[in-house]
Structure formats: structure tokens, C-alpha cells
Length: 619
Image (cartoon, rainbow, N blue to C red):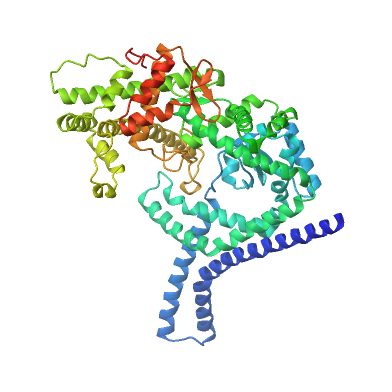
């Protein structure tokens, strides 16, 4: 049976490699046709001049034709030369990664080289980590990457950092086997040339967006980008099939190595992805929004996945593997690598700065409840009372004394249970609109209201169940929009300064505009301050209001009922009462916000000993 299996693998591998090479030749034929089209006018001009020398093409008409074709040939050749230079010199996109030198992970390099020897393929030139649950080979042979200090060998093995902390050494080797096997087909000259051509076209399309181009060069760059776009469209299908063939060949070759372990390891890949997603969206994102970044995300994913294994019976038994040697033991300094990967994750998924600073500092997991959870609750509660103060001030008019009630939970509950018809609610709505438009930011309030507009609402004659909540949610959304706009303005200014510094450094090195200016490290994302991979879509005003009311309740519980902030590895910030997580608070807050019914929440407050009439401490 093993002989039959080996024969089948060899046949499948050979089929995948042949398919990849065939598609690579198709890509190169597109390049050849473009080159032939570029030299065609020159060839016609040569024929016309040869006819003049031999006396076959004589006369005034043939002379005019020779001049016209000659001029056309020169123009086309100059344009083709410009396109070829830009395609060859444009810097291809490279995935932001944490580079691992061999001195930082000698055991990991040894494992990958041994795996390549068993597979009979060239070993990757270097290893890098990415804060994602995926692994792949990335070619960084372009001279722009080498000039930037990156690895000059090809290809680079990129490994998802969560794999190193959650997977065992044998599981990591089994997962990496198909990826490392891809270096075999990638070394074929035709496949390598086709990949270089496709990457060059992709990079040339982005050249018009290079900052600092003068109008003439910008016009030329747009023309080159259009030509590159046409060529890329012509070879896109062949390039995709080529990559599928390479993947098929690598997968077939890797079946002879740790095949049984790979089946179990693939289950761990899905589990790691689920836990990593929950850790980023529920735990890391609140910290990032507070200007703090968890410094040990990869270590945290182990706790998150262990908790997931405890809760999910389908994952039962997965945590028993933790007694085996983890793959992070292959690193010399796992803590330093984890910190670098955590900072990169904050850049990619939130758009944070590339280095720690006064407004961007790391936080350890032991400090998370106090430094992030408690601060987040009190910041949200302060924002909620700021909105209430603005509404009250706008409703009272100029010169009116400030409200006498302090930042209490009772004030919030009373405002959300205003059910008096007519002027009371109407005045609250108008005051909310006035508060949202303070400081010349009425346009942001309008945008927040238009985002929640639904044309089907006009067909419903029933009034909203809680108009006071709608008014408060609108004002809260406008305030958050102002805060976000101010943050993006600060980051955009920092980005502009960083790009100017990067451009100055590039000019000092004698770089041309078509080589591309290196991306500024202060922010991530192609459009400035926005993150490259945003984690959550924009939330509605009601959702934001429910979060702020929940934060207010938690502040009151901490200040008056001896509750403490806590961390749930799968759900993020948690309120602990008597050492147990308060899981029944959410539905009661929603009942208050959605329906204006305070009784469920008041029952919960009485049962837990929370005193809503007491002022809370705000940030």
C-alpha cells in the first residue's frame, strides 16, 4: 500500500508541477506578446528602409510612410522602455512581518532545514512571523527589499505567530510541510520569472500613488499604471492557476511527511483561528482604543484557547496537549518576539504607532483589569455624563445654573425612562441635536443621524419604544465621531511628518520616485491613519449607548458594591461579583435602553447591593 501511495503522490506532484509550469509559460507569453507589439513599429520601419535601399519602396509616398512609421516606432519604443523600467524597478508589496534572524531562533531554522531535506526541496532563505493564523512563502528578491535591509534570499517563510504558542513542535512541523514543499516548484526558472513579472505589474499599478511626484511624472506614472493594469488583467487567470499548481505540487510532496500528525494539526489551525479572533476583537481592541497594547498577545491566545477548550465540548481534550513541548520553545527569547508581534498586530488591526510612546504604552495581562477595564468603564461613563450635561445645558438655555445631580447611575436611569409625551421628549431631542452641533460640529451629528436612517421607518406609524434613548444615542454618536475625527487628524499629521522624513532619507540615498518611498512606520494601512484590517464595522447608536450604560453600571458596582474589574479571555472586560462573573447584566441594560423599562436593572442592583444614587468616580 505504501508503494501505491508513493506512486500516487509522485503522479499528483508531477501533475501539479507540470500545470504550474504550463501556466507560467502562458504568463510569459503575455509578456512576449507585449514585447512583440512594442517592437512591431520598429520592425515595419526596418522593412521600409530595407525596401528603399533595394529600390522596391521608392517614391514620395513611401518616404512619407517611412517617416511616420519611424516616429511611431521611436515613440512606442520609448514608452515601452519606460514601462519596462517602472515594472522592473517598482517595489513590490511586502507583508509587514517580524523578521527572525537565525541567532534568534536557531532551533526553528534547524527544524525548517531538516523538513526541507526530508522533502527534497531548497530551504527557505529566512523566517518571519506575522500576527495571523496563516503561513506562506513570500519572495523578497527585489533589490528594493534588499536595499531596505530585508532578506535577499528567496523565498522567505512567513509563519503565523499564534501557531508557535499554541501548537506543539510536531504539529508545527506537520503544518509547515506543505508550505516548505512549495520552494521546489518555486525554484523553477519559468515559474520564478512569471512571478517576478506579475509582482512587477502589481507594483507598477501602485506607482501613481507614490507621494512627491511632480505633475509630469505623475502623468507618466498614470499612463504606466494603465498599461500595467491591462497586462495584469491579461495574465491574471494564468497566474492564479500557476499558484494553484504550485500549491498542489507542494501538498502532494508533503504527504510523505507527518501525514497523520497533519490531520490533527489542521484541527488546531481552526481552533487557533477562532481563539485568535476572539482575543483580538474582545480583549485587545478595547485596550488599543485606550492607547494601550497588550504586550503578550501570543501568550494570551493560549489562555483564550484553553478557556475555549473548557467551554466547548467539541474542543474537549485539546488543552491536554499543553504538556508537550510548545513550538515557542524553538525561539531564544519568546517574550521579546511576542512583544514585537503584538505591536505589529496593533498596527495592522488598529492603525497604532510602530513604537511605544507616552500615548501608546504596553500593558501586561496582570495589569489589564486595572489599567484597561476599569479605565475604559470610567472613560465611557464620563463621556455619557458629558453628553447629558450638554443636553441639559442646551435645554436650559444660556445663563442657567449647572445641573445639581452628580455623575450617578440614577441620573442615567431617569433620563432613559422619560416617557412623558410631547414637550419633554421633544425638548430632549432638540437639546441633543443642539449638543451634538456644539463647537461647529453639526455636520458630524448629521452624518451620525444619516448613518442610522432607514427609509422603511417612515412606513411605520408606531413611535419608537424609547425616544429618550434615541436622542441620547444620537448625541453620543456625534461626540464619538468628533473624538475619532480628532484622533485621525493627529495620526494623519504624524503620518505626513513620517512620510516627509522617509522621502528625505530616500533622496539622500539617491532613490528615484519610481522605486517607491518606504511606507511610514508611524501608521499602517494604504490610506493613512486607517488600519489595514479593521476588526469591527461601525456600530449603531443604540449599541454604543448600551455599552456606555453598562460601563456606568459597572462603575457603580465597583464603587459601591465591592465588585472588581476582571478579564474574560473570550469576552474581554468582565465585572466580577464575589469572584464570579456577572453574566446577567447585559439583558437588563438592553431592556432599559431598548424599551425604557428600568425594573429588571433595578432588581439586579438591589440584589447585588449596588447603590445607584451614589456618585461614581470618573476619569
